Amino acid sequence: MSENKVHGTWSSRWTFIFAATGSAVGLGNIWKFPYITGENGGGAFVFVYLFCIALIGIPIMMGEVLLGRRGRQNPVQSVSSIATEAGRSANWKVIGVLGSIAGLLIMSFYSVIAGWAMHYAVTTLTGSYVGATPDEVGTAFDALLQSPVALSFWHTLFALMTFGVVAAGVTKGLGSVARFMMPFLFFSLFILLIYSFILGDFSAAFSFLFSFDFSALTLDSVLVAMGHAFFTLGVGMGAIMAYGAYMPKGVCLGKAVLTVGFLDTLIALLAGLAIFPIVFATSAIEPGAGPGLLFVSLPVAFGGMPLGAIIGALFFILVTVAAWSSSVSLIEPATAWLIEKKKFSRVKASGLVMFVAWALGFLTVFSFNEWSDFKPIWLLSLTPFDFLDFLTSQIMLPLGGLLIAIFVAWKLPLPVVQSETTTFSQSMRHIWLVILKFVSPVLVIAVMIAKLYETLLPLF
Ligand code: TRP
Image 1 (cartoon, rainbow, N blue to C red):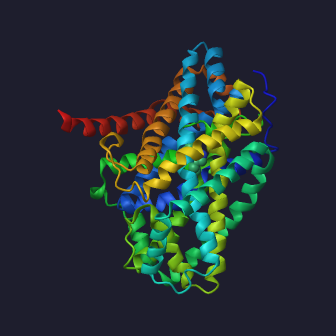
Image 2 (cartoon, rainbow, N blue to C red):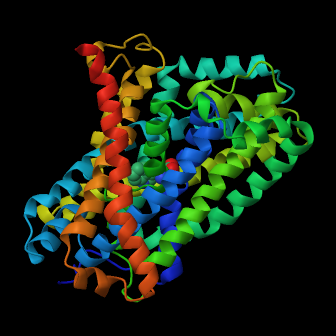
Image 3 (cartoon, helix red, strand yellow):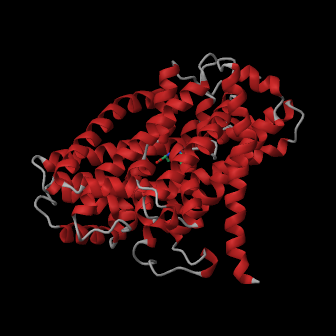
């Protein structure tokens, strides 16, 4: 298969790992994981999430990277040429098509939330939360949500930043951004953790996160946990496939993916352990506070900390950078497709893709103010933001992941899989393939069918 000229390659194994970690670690870990854990009752939800990471997310991620490195093109054309070469239908490219669209939809709301983090970097630095009560912090957050102008401003700025990196080409600057960001992110989470440990209610947080009370678990929570496993790893829509296309041949994709999965999970758990002690020590904040949880809990902590304005601002800058290195991967599949298939220049391609996602972002901007009561039946009684989140995380990503698992484990000839996994030991390859063949797809199908059944049953 020909190496495509528009694709560079990462300079080394570590550059791939840093870039892939940059894609995985983002708002999903620091913003979304804590708030959905709070909404879904804690422990049992965390357990199901970890289970899904290990048995669904990571095995499928290996399959997705394999496809990218084998195909060496954008996800649409990679899958269609691999399928054709293997004597299978070129229609498998639906994996890439569905994924590129999912990436755009996710980007649209991701950029708005990343905008919140940018707003918080500024307001924390200017001392807005110094000595503030939880109520005051909550009021300030509501004021932000009530201002479409402020939300649009930050959303637009973040969209431009993402465009800037993708227009320059992801293999150029991205690896180094992630390389510097990751140690700093660990460090600042660590400081927060110590603060929470000393001044928050750490034991309440710990038992909330790790006491597995399965009676509280609902089918919806299971679906949310599974969807989040895909979301947080950045799997199921071709993003990591596009990155795999830039991966040098001799690198072990198994070890690389395991490393990324481990770091991603670690950061999510650290974020949870930093946030929940503050939540439980503050009666004004509920664990189930929803998407605002990060933004109403941490400013309270920063407000009471020595040097809180500076540490807090640094933290929100790190969150912004983490979101930035993730958002790039969301629009890379569609961008690479426009470049390779439609012969766009990289600047035009990324500009067009980012423009569409930016415009769609206004659905999310207005979901928090003008349209907060707009929950039509045809959006399943959700706001546009909640609907987009549901559609992508709980339907499109699991579906994409399912197709990847079936395609790699069932449709690719074994020699092809073997030639891409020569660095795997026999037993490791065997275990991985058994999971990818039987365990991951069965779990995804079971959860989705159960949910469909539960939704449709009342209609009859
Ligand atoms: N994983 C990122 C996060 O946790 C978001 C993300 C980046 C993503 N690329 C993706 C989600 C691809 C789904 C698919 O914030």
